[in-house]
Amino acid sequence: MYQSIAQDIIKSIMADEYEIKLPTEKVLMARFDASRNTIRKAIDVVFRHGLLRRVQGSGNFIIKQPQTDKKVLNLSIGFDQSAMVEGGPLVSKVVTFDKVTADEALAKQGNIEVGEELYRVIRLRYLRDVLYDLEESYFPRSVVPFLSSDSVQHSVFEFIREAYGIIGSTTENYVHQVRVNTERAKLIGCPDGDKTVCLDAINYLTNGTVFNFSKTFFVYPDLELYYHTENIDLQQ
Image 1: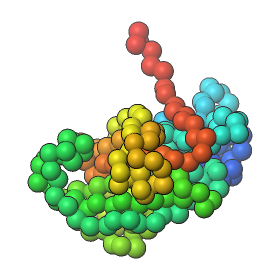
Image 2: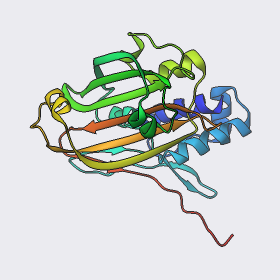
Image 3: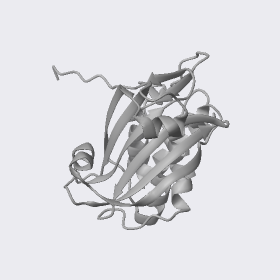
């Protein structure tokens, strides 16, 4: 329950419903009809997503995104929700939607077994009618048994959360520059071998099972990256 409450709070923050700070725990308990413990867990999730700054005795203040003329991709909350700040949501054009069997390359990429049956979703995604990214995403059918052609037109994560109750626990992100091959270059409209920023991601359930992995090639003009970290006192 606290995960869905956290998602609602994140959406409210992205929509500027809370401009300076979150409401008190008591107000949120009433709004979501939830216990104090559940609300605190939800707030912890929002904090780990880099959207809150805690001030002891004063509450949870909203972290404002860097004020630049460029577009900021908040890797702490995922680019779907980050794009909402810039006038999203993203609009998808599905290039490929099919089933494949994991070969050695895919197994290594997704930290799964060779031979695993996967849903493959390749999409071009647009923000304000401008190409934002090329996304190549995979979902093991042992965890996500069914995806529809309609579901992949929108947020797949939202679909599997509602259909199967799947909510990610941890994500491994690796950001690097790559040279796009001929097929990818043709899709995003750039010369073969051009460099672009690529995000490799693996999403895990609480039991360590992979439910999604992907490569996303960003082409949106003047894109910047933002990431939130929490400092830990190793002397405690």
